[in-house]
Structures are given as structure tokens and as C-alpha cells.
Image (tube, rainbow, N blue to C red):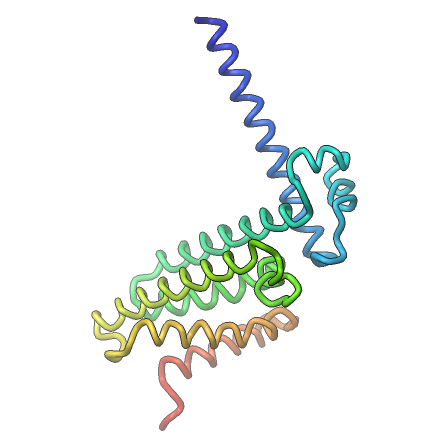
Length: 206
């Protein structure tokens, strides 16, 4: 029995070590892809940055595409977590909507690999790309629709079609993604978001 426990403990330690190595490779690859872009980054460069041999890289990942997929999935989880944390800290639906949009747009400035996957037509040919895009869009629209529905029920918002309004907001945010990435003045960037929110909340009519 003791030998069995030792064996199980050793197996658990091996799995933990492998996970730590894999997580480290993903973290290093995240920075490398962000710096050079998917097309210019090679497995050799990731291996060098991570202090690993190329054979070690292929032990954990079958291809550069698989590494990039892991990086993007990490960024999606990180962005989703940051958004939900920001939203859950607010009380009114209006505050939640503002928190969602600000956190989401700021997140895209940090998580360039996910943004690259969403916008680069070349990357749309990757097997996993469309699934990640579709799932993210669906989850984003559903979350926004839930916030809007809450605002309708609380009489904060007009009696709108929550799903259609959510899709409209998603389209508006996508239109600001590219300017958000190249804007170096954060005050100017935040003003653009504030202006969009003012149009959303108050319309364009006097």
C-alpha cells in the first residue's frame, strides 16, 4: 500500500511539473507572438525565449498553431475573468454596461494575440480560429443581453430588444478595436469610449 501511495504521489508531481513547464512555455509564447506576430514567430524563437530545446517544444505541442491556440485560449479566459470581475463590482445595469465596455476595450490593448486572431484574415484559415471567434461572440452577446435585460426590468433602460441591442453594441465595440490598439493617448482612448456610451445611453436627438 505504501508503495502505491509513493507511486501515485510521484505521478502527481510529474503531472504538476509538466503543467508548470507547459504554462511557462505558453506565457513566453504569448509575449513572443505579441512582439513578432503569428506569421513571423517560429518554434525556434519560442524555444529559445523559453530556454527549451526544440524537441522539448514538440513534446508539449505538436505545432506552432497549437501553441498559438493555447495562448489565445489563455487570453480569452483572462479577458473574460477581468470583465466579469469588473461587472460584478457594480450595482446598476448602466454601471455594469459601462464597466463591461471599458474593461473589454482596455483588455484588447493588452491581449494582442486574441485580437490578431479575430481580425487577421490569414489566421481565419487556422482550424480552431472560427470556433474561438464564434464562441466568444456568442458569449459576449449573451452577457450584454443579460445586462440590458436587467436594466429593462429595473426601468433603467427603455423596453428594447435586449438581444438586438447587445449585437449592436458588439458591432460598435468592434469598430473601435483598431483605433484602440494604435491610440497612444489613454485619455483620448477613454474619451472615445465615453462618447460611444453617451450616444448609446442618450441617443443623437435633442
